[in-house]
Image 1 (spheres, rainbow, N blue to C red):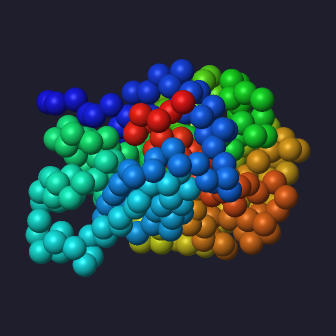
Image 2: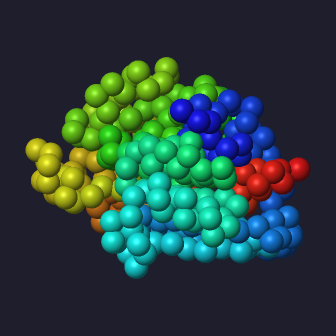
Length: 304
Ligand code: ASP
């Protein structure tokens, strides 16, 4: 298999801790409010086979605030609808002059396939149940604005972990820095081999146990159609796993409440929790821009 072009970001799993720290340090120097022409003349291709609000818009704003041009290709309205293969779409977009490709795809491994066949760097914007590396980076960036270090951070992740690329990337990242992570959700939503994912990973069945003493709580979106595949009724899920203010109080007093979005108020968390002072949900979105600026700058060899 060919190697991915330098600067590609396909996942967190195979990144060195030092590379992660370098990207976070670069992100801290990025300011979308003070545009820099670092990527002037560069073409950023955003190829989205799945819905996206935060990731897509923040990649676009990140690219534009560094002077790059962006082109958005969605699966609907493109030749993908006519049956064009993933790689043929990739070759086409490379041929029109893309300098870097940002791709979201429902299948795990789609960005890797692109990266090993194209000559341009490829950035994974979420692939199936596999990884969402820029989300993990922005989550780490956000945590580090509230905590000095990730080492010994006590993190609770609650919800549909099994299907979540966000959880997978976060677990890879946080465990590289010695965080202690507790997963909690119905058994159908927990990875079968969770403990092989990372050392320092624990599973609890009650949300109270998971959040007790936590520094950070990450709540994940629950899709009703997936819940229908479990033994739980919606109301049971809500009473057992929904993040409420009472449950939040079991965490450290200054614990932060995270969620990658989109949030479903009244399901995985209450309205009150979503808007409480400890909630950093909006801050995560905000931090996505400088983090994606750093990732794009690195991809295009401008990470100075
Ligand atoms: N926005 C995140 C993702 O694309 C989380 C989610 O959709 O639940 O993976």
